[in-house]
Length: 112
Length: 112
Image (cartoon, rainbow over all chains, first blue to last red; front, side, top):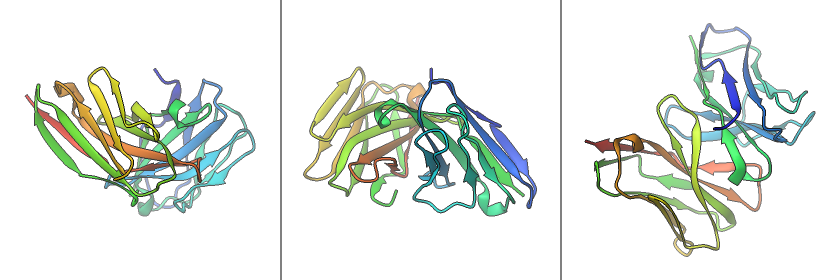
């Protein structure tokens, strides 16, 4: 059982609101990732981190930002939510390579 | 995702074998993975294969890799209703190693 948690699981929010999606892992993994999963099911990397104070943008441009102040915590923030941000957001962490990666259950965000 | 392709849907009868196919285009792939996503859940790593292997078996799962044709398949023997889910093929590459490149996912439906 993976020890990586995302909250909330579901969120419906109005346009213009600021939101933070939480992701925490208790495995001591240095690498953490955020993926966006669009309605057609494809996943795209939007942010990743090598460790504390490290944040990098992924392949898919995103208006969201991330921070990594603690090893176990990798929150994603949208300063002003828009309907185009409606998607599922999946957080993952790994110790080394992807053969040891775990995914959270995801946050399904709907912006109305 | 555009470099990793899967058919979108597959239906099989309970007890039959399921074969889910995937093609990829990047010859620098190091590992190839199969993930399972059940409704409302995150991604679960099912199995993976190193790019210099051509087959890997793990209980009911058999992975076949044809590196020449860049074709990967996942065979599930004695498919059960609990196998109904979306299955993602993914690859990690020697370049851009911080990203997993996902296919679009194949929705497997097992008919009782």
